[in-house]
Length: 194
Image (tube, rainbow, N blue to C red; front, side, top):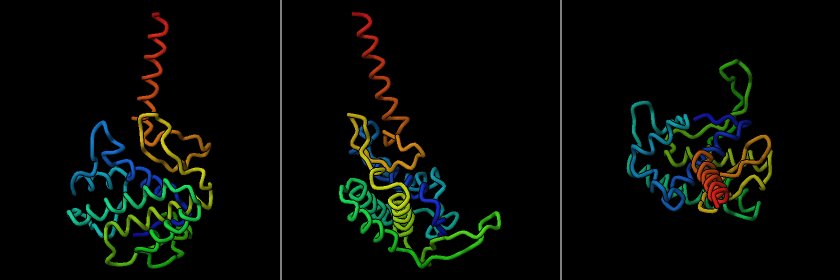
């Protein structure tokens, strides 16, 4: 797998999405990664193509178990209040499968820095490298204050805000944000009827 070193948003996005797949966050639907097929869907929806899963190869139950462990590790990093703890943990994640830094041409012929993963790396280790690289990029470019809890009072999700304005509030905007807006709208309607 080649991870574009200068583009941290995809890795940070996968980190955010992964930690918010657990039943403790998704109380409305339960565990999102309930089996290998769900992991396949998760990766496909985020356009994550892992060398560990060549086309036509599905993740195994063991792959899923390792990814669920990675989810716990990632959640601990996003929740960590100490920036140095996040740096150390993200470095460890990035190092799990990386084989080095390479200067390669992209599809447009421009030279770009890529982190490459080692041949034979597992699904979880390749994801760890993507997430670790993304988190390190956010820390370096945007700062630790971009790691935050969801602002919905009924949610325990976490997020890494890679938006330009830095104002993202919800871990899953179309769920948590909509839920809060609907509640506020209903409260206003009740107040207007009284």
